[in-house]
Length: 341
Ligand SMILES: NC(=O)c1ccc[n+]([C@@H]2O[C@H](COP(=O)([O-])OP(=O)(O)OC[C@H]3O[C@@H](n4cnc5c(N)ncnc54)[C@H](OP(=O)(O)O)[C@@H]3O)[C@@H](O)[C@H]2O)c1
Image 1: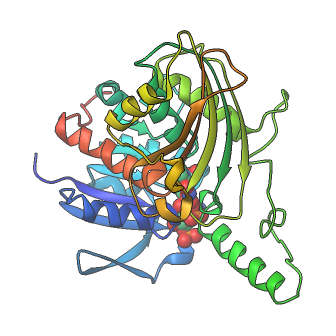
Image 2: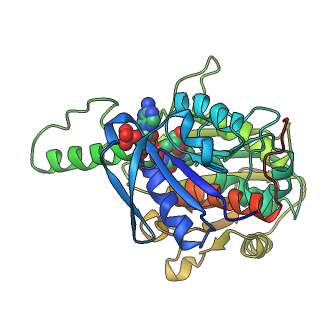
């Protein structure tokens, strides 16, 4: 087929803007581009490949002349617009949590389960931005030994909550440094603080974010019973999610073997030289596509255990880069929507 005609829904948002960058950086074939957002953004223009493109209000008719849609807006928009696009023969790569666990929706990290793309029926999903880096590291390490259990604590940047949250961190930090008050409006104060709740609480005490990390990791790895416990924390960092992860294996895995497997895995880079103080940090990993792993060591509490530290740019590999890579797989496999599905 000729180059796909593309819609980006939520083009004015944190992920939508980076999706435009990634399409250009990876020279994705673009046969046409429609950019949509809420009615608030009508009148704005965005630039792609030197061309000014007017932002349109999101509506089903946008998909009439599109082959592929990236949806990065709200859950409600994803729920309605993914179906509207699919009905019009347009394949959807969705960034929200709405579709990920549906049985007929592939949840894909191309370096881990690219073949799952073939099973799509019009909608594909990318994982939660906290899950993606952890899954990539686990996929590398399970080549040494089956995994018995995983315990993760995440340190998630404010851009994971969208562009408005980044602006809030900026405003609150400036106000507090000037001797004023943070005046949080929509969520608890984030400047100079940590929020041990992302999403809503479930009956079992875990949050929706922590539950996503559990279920999405199992689905992508095809390990439906993998024991995993996550604690997800919002931290006052603009970009990049980090995680401290402790893994128990069935057999011993040495730190050296783990570093080799991680370094050999596509999409993973090892930064681990304690003697020269080299380990991944958000300020260094922002704007990069790899998932960075360091601080690899024997876990002193878990039998056959390893402890490690992971950092990845949540707007790139955690969202836009992964979504564009999924679209590349669709193109490569000619996995377009078949009539009648
Ligand atoms: N941020 C991350 O790290 C990350 C990672 C993985 C997945 N995701 C997912 O990606 C999606 C977008 O996240 P984000 O961080 O980019 O959020 P964001 O910065 O708040 O952007 C939201 C986008 O959605 C648009 N929008 C809001 N309400 C709308 C409506 N009623 N109709 C049409 N468009 C509407 C906004 O348009 P206006 O500018 O006109 O308001 C904006 O373009 C979410 O589903 C999120 O869960 C985010």
